[in-house]
Image (cartoon, rainbow, N blue to C red; front, top):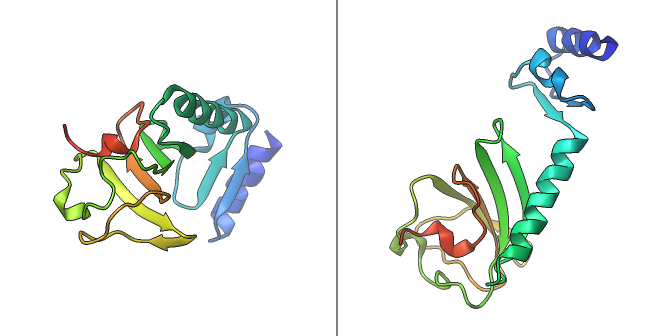
Amino acid sequence: MKLICLFQFMLKNRNKKIITKLNKLSFVDILGENSFQSIITPKKIVADNIVRVVRSIANKKKNLIENFYRLENNTVEAIEILVNSDSRINNIPLKDLKIKKNLIIAYIVRNNVAIFPKGTDVIKEGDRVIIITTESFFDDINNIIEE
């Protein structure tokens, strides 16, 4: 309870970003949500890592999930996928792909350089693509296109 009181005091008296680590999930609702705070829990971090590993293992096409995060009360997923040579979207300009509506390609990382994608950009083998989606069970870079 002392932590919650301290947290509320800090929210009222500072304009900086606050990151709060909670061990009990029941406290998340008490703290509420605002733009000045981020709440992390060890259980959520472990759960997200387990989902990332399971999806990577389950996907036999080897479009590997590098990182996985659930956001907005698990309604949105941020996924980093390593693109392999078998991807159907390799070397096709993004403007020519029929990308699903519930998905954003946030950026492409190529040779450790972040590319904020435009329609003329392409995804290549070896790229890491960061996708934001409301679709659950997204585990393959090829899932970004409509069938």
